[in-house]
Length: 106
Image (cartoon, rainbow, N blue to C red; front, side):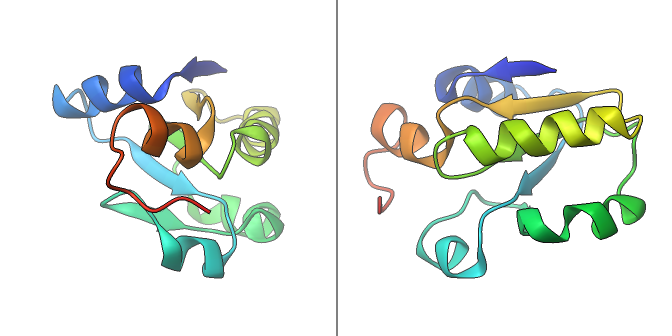
């Protein structure tokens, strides 16, 4: 599993490198507060079932609040054969603090 800092991830997405799935594994109430554009919400508890509907070959950037849940989900996906998984280090909290201070934090 690779990890990207918020700045690295933002630069990567701006470069238009591929079409990664931005997989947000937080709870719906968290997603309503703040989310990245074009991200897909699948709460962590639903990942074991939802993983069957995801493409294991598609690059998947996993996102949560602080980067802990997303790391666990990334490990889970890799154990299920996903070959291109990236964890957003520090999560959306770090994203807001380091790259976009206009985003709400909680």
